[in-house]
Image 1 (tube, protein in one colour):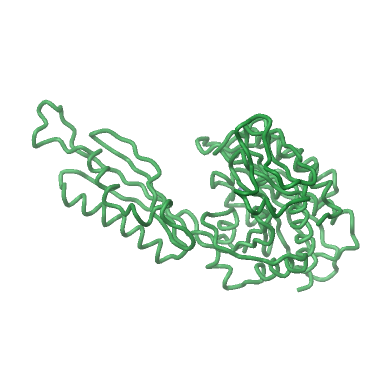
Image 2 (cartoon, helix red, strand yellow; image 1 turned 60 degrees about the horizontal axis):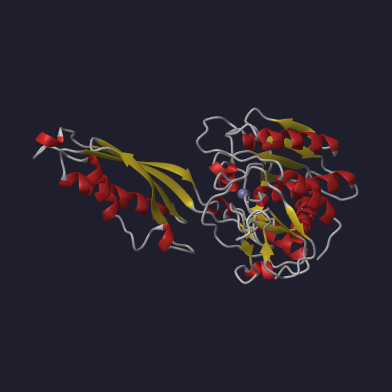
Length: 414
Ligand SMILES: [Zn+2]
């Protein structure tokens, strides 16, 4: 379905995706990369240009702005968020976005990667988009619709509302965050600075997806001290830390409870890296489950395995430290489902069937929700994220834009 917003959404997405704003998990800085300022500064300029209020770039690299209320009564403050960084997982430098106008349903080819093809046979969602205007990259980079699509949708919503004072809505706060892809998007000051009663991240996929369940997540670090000694005189004395590390991995479940053997609501334990020498070794794990007790059980299992390997080799020293990362946002949202119900109702009113499936990951919304700002995730249309086959339909972005505009009106009716 075409909307009056399609041309604006398309030109915004083309403009934003051409800007490299990749984040970097290895950087200690905040934001993690200087290039993210190219997006942040542009948004400050554009927000001022469309007449937004309170536009500012915080010292932690988030752009904030307000669309003032048009209703007289005390309406709740609604937040809209998107992240400006793109994923470090794939080349994001020199993105050349391409528009496939009125998509003909054939496989899409890429000028810079002749062997690459995006086929509707492999991606049924693409097959359902015949006639849409599809945007891809050129083959050697990701597109970065994750989450420039969210940025383009929010900016279009903001421009439209600021130009249409006749539309009734409450105060709307906007936030464009850095470093979401490396899990550092939500600064401790953001909830207070945002000042929203509830918010929505525009960072979801297929039209209709409203997500309010994420993994609960912990990290674990195992440190092993062996007994190091010259191998020539090692008999009965050497305790090799690498052997113990291997034993721990070997003892953990492998045919179940790993990312590659689980789906749906199942959680997992994943070893993400290990390094060391005969003297010492260090291993990192991520633990994931949708429920608190399931997550605790995975931590307990990891500690039991460490204890068992330790008891088999008392001369070594093995420690296992578990650190909380984020929690399933459902725990907070189920106490007050208002934002989820609003998003479902707005999606329906825009003409689409809302669907809510648990996300096997986290969002900026999981942290925000935990910090007191209930924050479900709303669809943008983005597909095949973090790689060269990433694509999005302009008309899907239009559907998200109309849904947000309905959200703005309905949030003020309460
Ligand atoms: Zn994203």
